Length: 404
Image 1 (cartoon, helix red, strand yellow):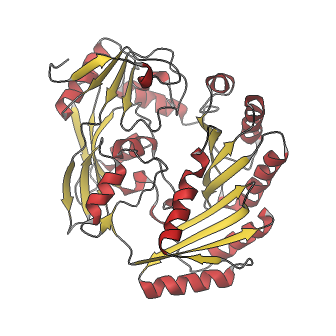
Image 2 (cartoon, one colour; image 1 turned 30 degrees about the vertical axis):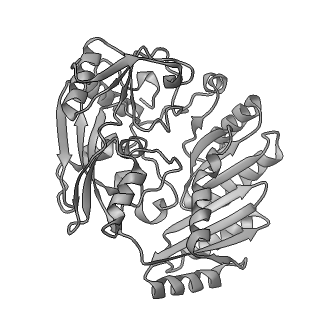
Image 3 (spheres, helix red, strand yellow; image 1 turned 120 degrees about the vertical axis):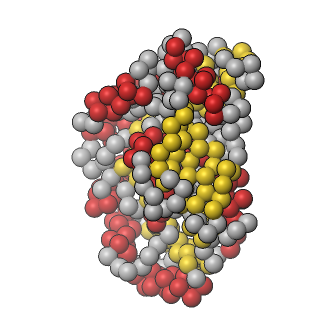
């Protein structure tokens, strides 16, 4: 290891699911990061990459943990090309800091995370997204270039710095959602969007999921272009539908009026700080407290059945249930019941034909031991494992925590 790297003994506050790393290293340059990974691979040190540390609980419990590589010092905005509406940013820069810098030029990266200290590398590595996914997709969809540090000690670049240049684009897609199992993200280049001049949100409350699902279908069949299109179920609010429109003032007003006309439940209209507070809550509410948190996917046509499943979980012995998600088919389910009830809920959800992939994001060690975090292997698992062997032949990255 380079003498310029910061290396220290692991401490209790560095633990992942109770497993304390032997060492923590904080490289100060991309070259040091690549060199560090090469040394860890050579010595077969089980290694986890850490940015803001907001998602370290995601994944299996590590059997052993030799090294945490903290990339928080790689935190520069490398370039903001205002005219091209692209930016290159190092992986350790917090997403919130990036958007504050971009806002000085009226632009932003339309990715929302529930975690205040989430870094750019972390949101790409987990493909983390929130309500803005409805219109702009996930980080994978906004990524146009990437630099990786590999376990061979190399720095590899793919993609470009302008939207029309897509050379090597698939490498960026490959590491998006890989949870740091293939390589370390050094920097990423994104296409940006102008900050909308106006925004409005409609919120409607329903007594049952069937009426909500009918309104979702009506809105999907319309010409209303939504920036965010979310559903929520909770003990307090029951069923809610949240629609956000963001464009010019005139277009926003027209979109809100047309959306309200199509809804069977009269919606409330929110603007300004009340609107911003609502979406902050919508993004963060599944993570409040210490409940078990699952990520689900479903086909849009299966939304009524998914809402019925959530209602049944609420009526069973799972304790309070909170469900938030994109109407298009991805969401989070928070279970506040005991571990046995949560395990039973996971089994039932995975057995349902109406729900796709069910991943356990936050849970106790016992629950993780009882119900595999990532679920049953899919048909693409062998392909993913082959890629893992190619990028990380010693199998050190992410310390066996998954998904491959």
